[in-house]
Structure formats: C-alpha cells, structure tokens
Amino acid sequence: MHARELVELAAVVSAHGPVLVRAMPRISPAAVQQYWTASKCRLDRWARSLKGITADIDCHSPKALREQWSRVRGVLEEILTGETLTRVWTAVAAVCDRRHGVEDAEPVARSVLIGHLEARHRVLMLLVRGPGIDAEAAVKLNHLRRRTERWTDLLVGYLAGLEDVSEFAFDPQRAKDFAQDLRYQCGDPGGGQAWPLVLASLRAAFRQGLAPVSPNTDLNARIASAILACFPGELFDSTGLFRSLWLMRLTNAAADVQGMIDELLSPDMPVERTHCRLRRFEK
Image 1 (tube, helix red, strand yellow):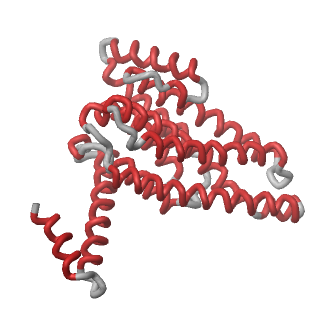
Image 2 (tube, helix red, strand yellow; image 1 turned 90 degrees about the vertical axis):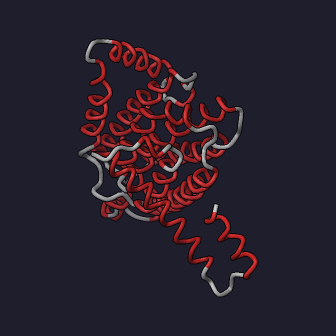
Image 3 (tube, one colour; image 1 turned 120 degrees about the vertical axis):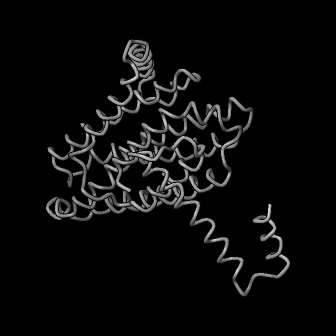
C-alpha cells in the first residue's frame, strides 16, 4: 500500500470518525492489537533505515549518497506523509475512548504517535545536516512536509465537532479555522458536495511528486486494514473507494480465520483446546 493511499485513508477516517464514535461502544481489541503490532514493526524499520542513512552520511561521500537517493527518498516521504493517518486515527481513538469511558485504543494510538513524532524529528534533522541530500531534494521534501501538515490540520479540524482534538493538529488554530470553514460550507445550499471536493483535492495534492514505490507497503496495508476493522461494516458501500476498502477489510478478516483454522488443524494442537476453539464457531 503506497504512502499516498494512507493519506486518502486518513480522509476517510476523518469523514466517518463520527460514525465510529456513535456506532461502536468499544473499538475491537484485536484490531487495536494489530494496529500496534504493524505500527511498531514499521517504526522499527524506519529506525533501522534512518540509522543506516546517518551512517552513510558519516562514512560515504556525497556522490555515493546521491546514488542511494531512491532508497532514502521513499523512507523519508513515507514518514512525512504517514503522519497524517497517525494523527487523525489517534484523534478518533481518543474521542471514542473518552465518550465511552474506557482506555482501549487511545493509549496504543498515542504510543504509536509518539514513535512517529520521533521518526519525523530525525527526518527533519537529516534534512538540515544531510550532505547526501541536495538542495533541490531537500526543498521538495520540505514542501511535502508543509503540504502534509496543512492537510492533516484540515482533517483533524473536521473532527472538531466531536470534541476538542486540536492537540493532534500541527497548528491547532489552523485546524479550528478549517473546522469553521467546513461547517459553513456544509451549511450552504449544495454543501453536500463540500467533502467530495475536499477528498478530490487531497488526491490531486498527493498524486504526483512521490516515489513510485513505498518501502513498507506490506506494513502500510496491515495498518490500514487494522483501522478499517474498527469501523462497522455498514459504512462501506459497493462502489468506488469504499468498495476497495471493504475488500481490504474482508481480506484481513479472512486471513485471521485462515490462521485460526490452520492452528485448529495443527497436529500439535491438544484435543481439549481444539474442542474449545470449535465451540466459538458454533455460537
């Protein structure tokens, strides 16, 4: 799953976060666990990549580093753009937990966000001191950072009607301004088209300029499927983007069931435990 698709998913999470808050008394613990596991694996990969990049800067010539730019670029872009989904999902998880008086999803989401903020800080430090990143590339990455921050604040602002989630924005005041603008547009005649236009603009903003392949497509997909598994199935229709998201959700569920079946049929599985597991299918 490409990094730009995670930005689009962040828009879907922002738009339908209120549905999750109203429809689900508690977020699925299994989905939260999957989100944590996949996110932690991705954070570890990022840390190794950034460490390797720093070592290259210290030990290699700028010319050699420029030759490795395609690998470096994908990691840096993934960290910068991926923060949109991390912040938006943390905001939704926080609202869900607060509304229902639990601490299921917010602590996990905040932990992932803290790790993401650390990775982002290292990226920014790399842009400042990295001799292997030429000025043109650094400028493009900085533009990507600023574009990502603005879109993140807009999507966080869309959730402002639920509770005060401005802490998850890059610029809380900008998020509040975006929230006010969206409420005004949606209140106008024909305002129902406001959000589709926002989504179309977001897609256009990230359609070009990114590396053709993200370095962690597998973990990006696992993170996305974990978040989607938290939403009620009725949210997804049979067309367009929602159809593809629904298929991802079903694929994730099917993989979980297949894993359970493989475990049940394992010759090492005790008979008593097998009977206990099978009773779950009978209910």
